[in-house]
Amino acid sequence: MSGVISDNVGRASGLLKAVAAGGAWEFVSSATPSAAAAFNVTGFESGFDFCIVFRKCSTSAGGAELLCRVIQSSTAQTSSDYGYAGIISNNNARKAADNQSSWKLHEGSTGGQMGTRFSGYVYSYTPKTAGIAPHIQWNFGGEQDDSTHGYHIGWGEYDQDTLAIDGLNFFDSAGGNFGASGTVSVYKRQSE
Image 1 (tube, rainbow, N blue to C red):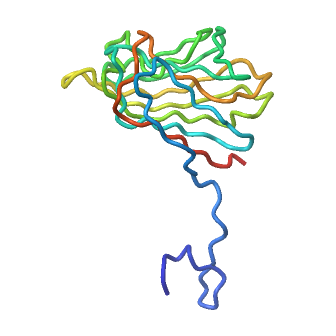
Image 2 (tube, rainbow, N blue to C red; image 1 turned 90 degrees about the vertical axis):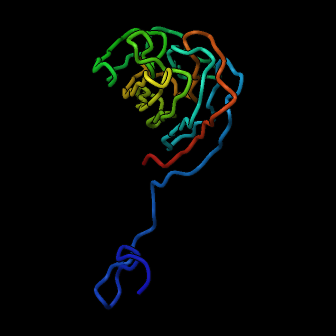
Image 3 (cartoon, rainbow, N blue to C red; image 1 turned 135 degrees about the horizontal axis):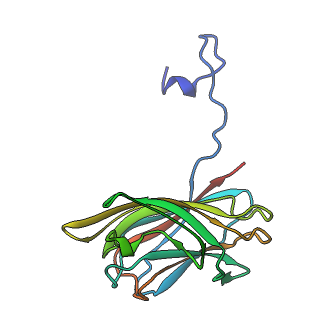
């Protein structure tokens, strides 16, 4: 017998053959957001969840906050319809805000800055479903320098559910450019 037990189902030996896989993450694309003040991840499709992974990214504006907005009809939405909650581990702060103009994925004002180096992910649940308020979840780690580190987790909701979202817009609060290093990769999987 080869493989693991879950590979073999319904055989005379009593083992069961595995059913077809579903819900696996599929690679969509990857890029370096080099020298960009903001960048968009677009192309969200109906019936899929999306995960945007940041690997060893950097920003020219140390201490800035990494911010995110939804894109609807090819436009980043700047209305005060963003709510979020999160935890910042370097000072055990709990943050919550409503009626904001973006989500704060890294809260720079508490000493847990996004820093010059960061990695993490943003997960978007069923973004192309009109009538359901878009939700995201995030998890980031970053360092301002060799002695200041921050770990940030959170959840957010966009309070407008009349349109499905087409993507996400990322930028930093200080208006700095993203560095030449690091990659941003996009993955998708069936949500239903």
